[in-house]
Image (cartoon, rainbow, N blue to C red; front, side):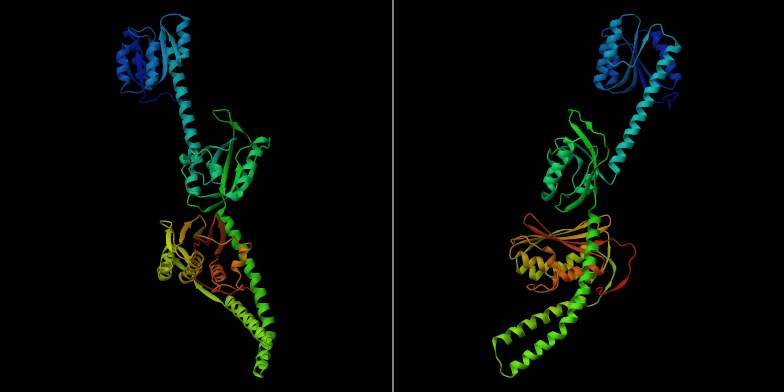
Amino acid sequence: MVTDQLPSVKILVVDDDPGICDMLKEVLEHKGYDPVICSTPVKALSLSENESFGLAFVDINLPGMSGLELATKLRERGSCLEVVFITGSDMIEHAVQAVKLGASDFLRKPFSFAELGICLHHYEERSSLKRQIQLAEKRYFDLVQGLPLLIFVLRKDLRLDFINQASLSILGYTPEEVIEVPDWFSEHIHHEDRSRVLEFFQSMFDSEVPGFSTDCRLVHRKGRLIYAIIKSISTRRCLDDSGMECVDGAIVDITDRVFLEKSLVQREKLKTLGAISAEVAHEIRNPLVSIGGFARRLQKKGMNQPELDIILSESGRLERILGRIRDYLKPVEVQLEECSINSIVEKSLDLLSPEIERMHIRCRLDLAPAMALAYVDRDVLGQVCINLIRNAVAAIGKGGTLNIRTLEGEQSFHLEFRNRSTSPPLKNPERLFLPFDEGGQSIGLPLCQRLLKTMEGTISYAEEQGEIAFTVSLPKVTQPPGRIPFQAECA
């Protein structure tokens, strides 16, 4: 919409003809503008040092300096947005030069009120259009920067040309930090996914496929993994200032969803494990009692054969396994209440400080500030933390470092225990959470998994570049369920 007037807009008038100056001053004031009258270029330049003008009426034939030269200097100083040239001659040269300088309009003396009115109307139209464009750009900018998605523009050489403010909340880097590093995008893809993702984008640019979508893991500034889906926003490709092909895309953080899916998988595994374990324990116990009992009878009768020792030893081992099954299936009751996860971590470290100091282990805490309270069982989560810290201490040995970090996502809390490992990578990491394997001092890790399940939580294991990490994830609960009796599901 075009407005009739633009209040408070200063307009510069530079003309050595007093009649023209008076006419322009009267019309401009009537229109609601604030005219500033000058008769010489020197005075106009002096005023422009401290003033800015939305429009300037400049006579081409001025004493001491041409209007064309004056307009150039005003533009260079940025003190005038638009220029309307006034001339009393019909020289085509002046008109051509005025156009080259970016003249907004042209008035030839003598001009009428109607011609001046049309000139001002054109200025108001352009000003209104500029304001609409600026408003649209601001709305678009605010929309893009405010989205909870990471919006980016990726060039064909796999360099990011643009990224929005979500890079700070999702990956821990400001847009400026991202843009200034040419290989930032490829460097922050997890090393196991990097070659696949880079080949995907390279083939996408080489082909004429309009859209794209892939998933990968990105590395946060603090080292944690961000599970993400990378997809195109528009099927149209564009060119940057250098003429290189670019695509617009978005990165969706699905870390919470991945942890939720893992939670559901673990729940089903535990349900199956509980049913099988109860059946196995029941079926084994009766014949095991008979085998052990008869073997001990034979030993009492003086039969000290080596085979009897083997039978008794293996029977004892089976009894210990059954004991683990019994303990694993024992009902647990939890009392959920508002707790600070950071405080529970610090208290667990205090309790284990003698063991940690004896092993000369350094503990580095990176606790999320202003972390919301979680509805958990304080004692149960404390037991989980103690088990995981003890497990890390045993794996680290003397003089190592244990890194403990708390994180808060949109739907869950995360607690990470990370340390370096000298052991070879595990072929079957899932066996860590089985309560029946020999070799451990206790069933700490399986117990952690089971205790976390009572609070709808999960535990995951990862090996990355010589480090092992156990990550505990707990959902955000708005309504505390209170006391929850938990028992492993059995068929």
